[in-house]
Image 1 (tube, helix red, strand yellow):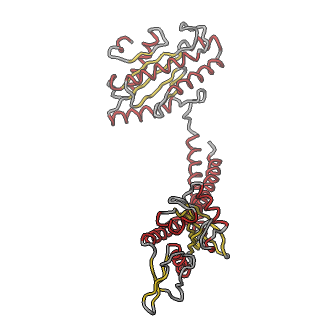
Image 2 (image 1 turned 90 degrees about the horizontal axis):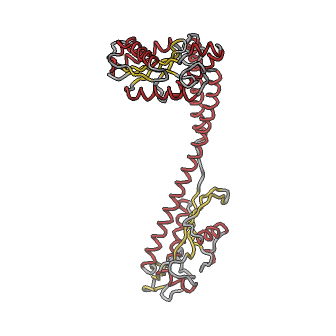
Image 3 (image 1 turned 120 degrees about the horizontal axis):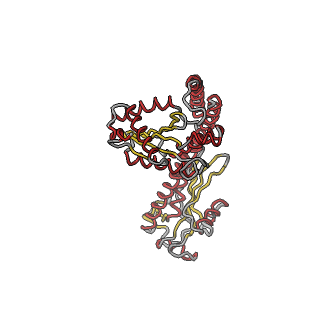
Length: 409
């Protein structure tokens, strides 16, 4: 385990993570401001549509003619102008003219622009711009709204547009153009002054601070862990031959698990395993092959354990031991039988064996509540006695300890 290398790897990953966070937050900040611009434009458009619908529902509204409110020359209506007395003349304001007047007020007060437009307008000034033409084409394809960011007079603006649907009240003016109720006859543009303002400096400073704290913490803890690991590594806890925990590790683990099982009133099972006729295997194939056989069997036992809490170790010679916390007799038997079958299925040649000419294993099983063990030594002893009976009764078997086995042994 190269802790110093892992520290470097973690520092690189930490840098990537913090950089990604900064990019992500910057992107989200921009996206959120754009979302607000979209929602604002959409709300303004709906307000205009509602106002137009109100106007249209009344067949237009009359207002006094003034210097700034001259009659609409594009409104063909015999009752467009009404004279009331000698000093008062009223002129009809239709939805389109009202929209234009609202746009003029909004532009002066907030810089917001409204533009009612069409590909076939009655008023020439309402002819669609190049951008608006593209929006109108998109509406014909079924798009419900469209928007874009653009530069206009050296200023960035958010340009939003949604279609105007021809209603029954609109046909008075637009039927002669060939429109029918439900047709898209144009749209209303909304332009908002918009400048994305991301607090990039403050976000960068905060991310740099978090990045620096993380690096200092990782290096401090990593070096401390490295020293601790070197101390632990100097202790022999693994079996050099098989690569699984040794008997010392087992002694510490079984004591720990026994105490936990007694405290929680839980079952604890132990399986003692012994390779059948292993001495004859060594005599026949030599110690090199014998060592290889031990490694294969040890790995097979370890691979047969499915739960992270299960533990196996080399007990000595050709003996292995398995500790199964929180395991009933039935569950332990399942594990023991799985180990036996897996070793058998490796089909390691053993011509001196009387169990099919292959390497097999015998297993003895003891469970704390069955044994009523008062110590972990007693539990191990019971499992060892069960192993003895498994070998005595033909090998390549699993035997579970039961009352009376002491006498049989």
